[in-house]
Image (tube, rainbow, N blue to C red; front, side, top):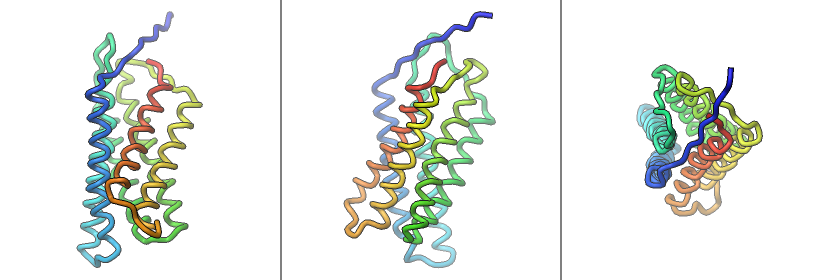
Length: 195
């Protein structure tokens, strides 16, 4: 049986929109997360949930818009279960990472960065299984490792800037770094993906 590969291109407008969505979600999610250390009881739990949900919706939406930006000769259909599972993974991992980062411990911040980076990457690759009904996907291991490294390093930098830097930079800069982590991971992984 002959295996054919298809090329794909991107809509620049949707790519730009995906990055803007990631930055906007990072801004709102981090601004909520910065209120967590001073909060107690129910307010603390609500802030963690709100931050995690905002970041998750933004991260997941960025990836989905990034996939909608793809133009191929064959229409892409998405299986519902992997798509929803990728969102659930994102919610859980982001919530734990934000909680750990809000504790303002350097050791926990490293764990939070690892969790968030690996969570974003896992969410991406689980979400990519949703297109297997239309395409068989192969992922170049070098690009996959690079995407994981980008997600961990940029997530760690964004969390450190927001929670541990001696002088926290403007919140917008933290959001841009986190938005670059999410979109950089996605587009690096897609650069190594063959349909």
